[in-house]
Amino acid sequence: MRADSLRTWLQFLQDTNRLARIDKSVSPKFELVAVAKHLDGKKAALFTNVAGHQVSVVSGIASTRTMFAEACETTDQELIERFTRAVAHPEPCTLVSNDNAPVKENIIEQDDVDLTTILPIPTHHAEDSGPYITAGMFIVRDPQTRKQNVSIHRLQVSGKNKLGVLLLPRHTYHLFKQAEARQEPLECAIVIGTDPLTLLASQASTPFGVDELEIASALRGSPLPLVRCETVDIDIPANAEIVLEGRILPDVREPEGPFGEFPKYYGPKSDKEVVVIQAVTHRDNPIFHTIIPAGCEHQLLGGIPREASLYQTIRQTVPTVRGVHMTPGGTCRYHAVISIRKQQEGQAKNAILAAFANSFDIKHVVVVDEEVNIFDAEEVEWAIATRFQADRDLVVIHGAQGSKLDPSTADGFGSKMGLDCTVPLNSDPFRYLRIQIPGYQDVNLSDYGL
Image 1 (tube, rainbow, N blue to C red):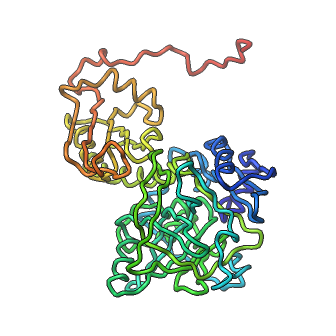
Image 2 (image 1 turned 120 degrees about the vertical axis):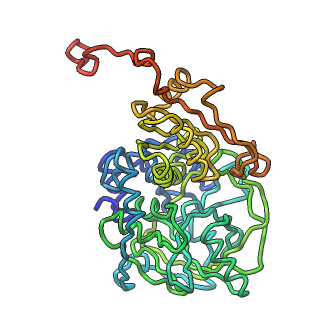
Image 3 (image 1 turned 45 degrees about the horizontal axis):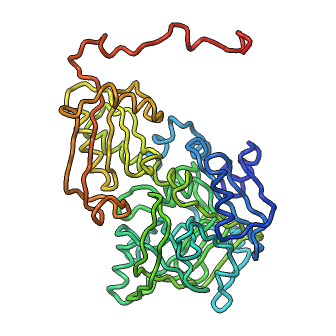
């Protein structure tokens, strides 16, 4: 399969002319990310000559919706349905031996662990507190159920074997707080360099207790090979490039940040949890994956799973929902565009309320009729311009919880707005009839010498 591992996926991108190989020496501080940013949304960037390091770096491995669809071996239109099915029907992984796990080709333990020399970890933005791991899948295990949880957190390099981690109040944080209450560290593994399917699965919105690696198996259509870590009780993808094995320390908080985040502003400095790394395993000639914060890859990784969750939530209230889109301009988190086949007045407003209930991050919602292309910003703006009247179609909610990373809020406390841009059901059909030119779709400009 084209996305069996990061390496098979990069080969596929190379074969389709979507992998840029940069052999010129680049600095991991700003320069590498600056070059990758210029290719963002166009090509993946593979840096083979990072100053001071032997390890290559790749960025932008899936920076378009089409790339994610191709990894899932489906179409752009069917991507959300494909992902939703996988979330609803996870499949078991398979455990393999070290001999069948490329990630075990090199094992570094204890005193030899120095992340600053082993890995070419980039510094991304001018005011970042230092180098950050941005594409590390963070895996922990529930000691009661033995189920694992997978997520991605920003990881500040705070020392040769120490990372500061931002744990939001979700599943990993819940398991850590349980361990901390017992005065115990929480074992973890940080996986760097996997295929787009496994990365995408890690971002699924699921109930507590669902193992995201089993969602990856469902997306693959075959069991994801896993291998047990060397020093912690965690199973990790056997074909990964690099794995850091460690523990989140109880009752320890140290300064972390600032760091440039997905809204294109800095998350502030504050005291955060600390991870101590005790072992590193990696493939021969490993490839370090970095995600450009607020770049296309970052936004889509957050946006596609959110779209799947949002679609499911709205369908429970408005069964005739046709599509949802978390827009890039809204950082794939704050703005949602929803298309419905309206059958009753009020359905658009119900869809707005359902969207707000789905995620506290969602700030502005636009609901349009099904013929409006929700992925075309001009089409959506046209619907707002010609089908919306604020006195009848505006929904405003004050005093709601939002994202703390939105600088316009008061520490996450703010207002939300929904726009009903659907055509009134009792309107004169001619009043909203879209103009068209007969035969336009059949014109081939080459027939006219153009």
